[in-house]
Structure formats: structure tokens, C-alpha cells
Image (cartoon, rainbow, N blue to C red; front, side):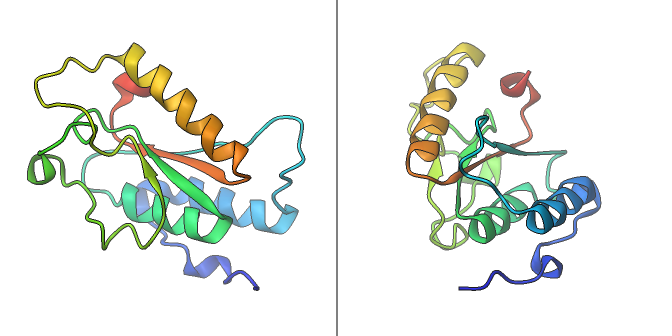
Length: 140
């Protein structure tokens, strides 16, 4: 079907550049045959709507969300981390959202390894990886 116009993507004050980039991607078209795969990053401060924007982008461009929040990778911390609920995911597949025992030491190197595997999996399915979170520790 036809994609909704760009105005349907949330325009968040902290994410205006990404929203503008999204519009230019639509105008130029997303080339899945490009020699260099595309990965979108949604980063920002706490409670700025990163998850909502990532889900909107994933829905619009056929993507999957890869969590990069260092608290949300752990099981059993939904209130501490404001982890998205199953309903809020709107059917968009999420990776690295839980699955790590709360007592485990999940390092930046662990994240890099797991995120690379998740990105490869998403790309191999022909989807757009959308990495979202506020933990610069993992992204650096």
C-alpha cells in the first residue's frame, strides 16, 4: 500500500532532525539494493519519545526496533526504565528489549556483539534496523 505522508511521523522537539531526514528518505526513496545497508538511530534524553518515534519509523519504512537503552536490556525493570509494553510496540518486532538477567553484567562489548547480530538479522529479512535508546554508553 501507499505510505502515509511524512506529517504522520511524530515531530518531537528532540528528534526534529531525524524526522526531517525521514521525509528526505521518502522523497529520494529507500534503496534496499544499496551497497551500504541503512541503519537509523533514534537517540535522545530520557522521556523525549524515542520509542514512539522509533516505532513510527519502523512501521513506515518496514523496520524493526533494536533497543540500545542499557536498562531496558534487563528483565524485570519495566517501571525503572519506562520499557515499552507489548501493546505499545504496535506489532513492530523489537530486539534486545529484556532477555538479560538483572544480576548479569551486560557490557558495552556485549551490546555491540548482540546489536550487530540483531542488525544483521533485520537486514537479512529485508527490513530497516531502527536502533533506539538513550544510553550513549552502548552507542559510543
